[in-house]
Length: 193
View (cartoon, rainbow, N blue to C red):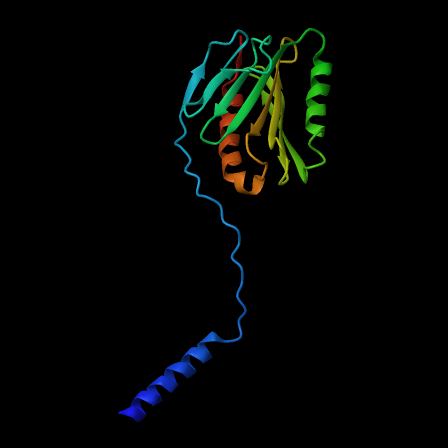
């Protein structure tokens, strides 16, 4: 019996040593928390003087507290994502070029952190909405999405998405993509008054 026990012990020891192999332990890649995204539903914002659009029900519309004198500026806030789309509105009065240059300047401020900037043209002749949407790629970009919209004669709106967290866009990418769809919906439903 003693011989069987020692043989069994030796066999288990050899099996354990052989199973270890020569593999070195590998660190696991960094993981991120799972983000539960709500179902897409929209409601119409029709309380602004010069424009109307649809925004997500899981967001709130607030005045821009940093510019209290600008009554036509608004924020579309996403509290569960700590994100905000800042919307500024200006009436066009033979100064569209100035507004376009300002929008371009705001984009170029992110060039040092961006690894790439893609743009998408907006043309909706039926609603007289024209503009550009900029997608800023890169891990440290503070605003991954910016846009401007105009009818080129009376109205100009500029929007930018910011998060109230450290800009780690690798981990924020699912939320950025989710809100990008909401921005597209906002643009597609925008109407000038």
